Image 1 (cartoon, rainbow, N blue to C red):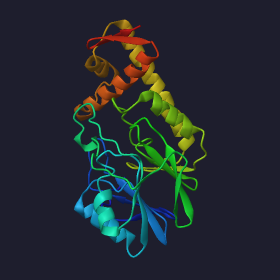
Image 2: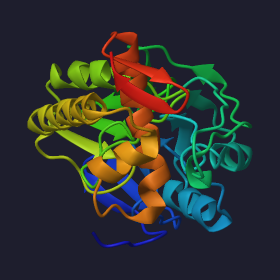
Image 3: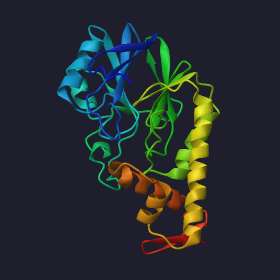
Length: 281
């Protein structure tokens, strides 16, 4: 993937993207902000509060009316630029509900934006009219409890719920594996043509890819059940066995995802914990 920071790229009629300069092990080349519409526009996931990115968004909007600043969720690589963009344009902040929790592990780039204050929260199925087309909220909790995707025609802006460069990190206490799987199944039943994620290239085979993601998570669950069935294990031991050769920067996030699986399995009566050790029930 090329990384043309601060350059507006038109990906299809009425959809353009602008890449923020915040690359990391969790954001890939950075957060992609989307500009929807032509005569009047909305910005989806304005991104981190980087002055050069906010300037680039204002330049991309140009003389057009910005009618909404829309956020899929409130991790700090997605929503903080909503405030300065709203101050400069007068546009309302619309989208996910506010949420501020600390995550598990040192993921400072993905901790929550405690200053996020929307003018309007969208429930599942509610929409904003942008340039004569509805942009519809699709509730997809799992990565975070407040995560929304946005459907625009037969394209879906999938935020962090579905990305083709990486699997989504699901980290308790707010990330919930059971909710994430239900949200994937919800998307599987839709007929979207393409997904535009907040990180990475578009997903051009969405239903097939969602089935792959669901299968991957079920295989991971079976792997974890096998490991704790062999002997009581702490999460670092499960991570070392389940993720051989993992980039050390991603070990805390992998531990969070393993915990999310274990919490789900515990609720279903399949595993139990004693202190830091997990074992099959």
